[in-house]
Image (cartoon, rainbow, N blue to C red; front, side, top):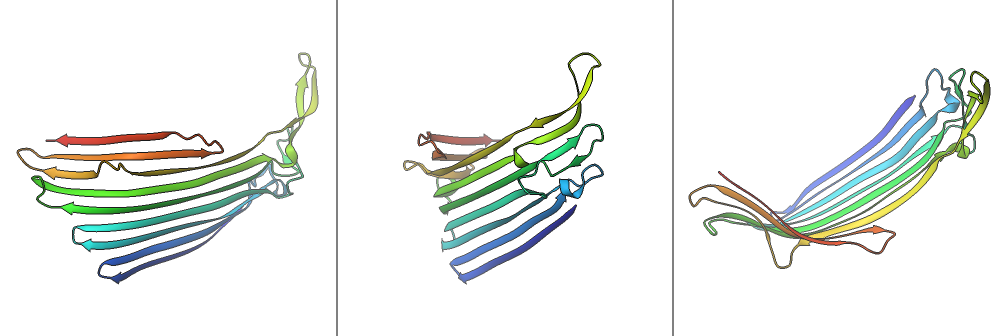
Length: 246
């Protein structure tokens, strides 16, 4: 088996001016696994190649209003395609000999899998000193995510065969026969999610020291989810708080 991976990577960090900073990167790779499954009982013609490219990208823009207030815009994207290719093509089935344990003909599976995801967020953060007897970080923003994941997998030529399998209608009345198996699936899925701070609330992380030390974190949130192909999607609103003291 030969495993080849081609990779490329790029990164840029640029301070536009004292108040604006840009950061981005991109990474690409291509997997090429040849003769996957090669062994003493599986010859080259009964193996497969597993190949496919993948790319990941990210973008971050930071703007500083003051030493206590800044905003961020973040974008992210990932795309991948993976394929399992039988060495004899998709029209030749795999055969397995029960008596010898040898495979021939072709690799059993043919498969394709494509997936991608996009995320975006925009936030504004403010740090307040000496406010309500303590220091506090206030943060507001929105976030969006969308992605899909599709996969198709099936036996090459629709079947895989087992030859010389001992089958008996009666006890010890063995006869050698051939069994054919068929299986496959084609799954397509995609969905999205968005969330933001509640219009009537603000998220915060705070600390103060009247007589004891305590921390609190609250995040009112609005979330909507959708999964195609259905057009009905649940809406959830929630507020989550954690606190502790010592």
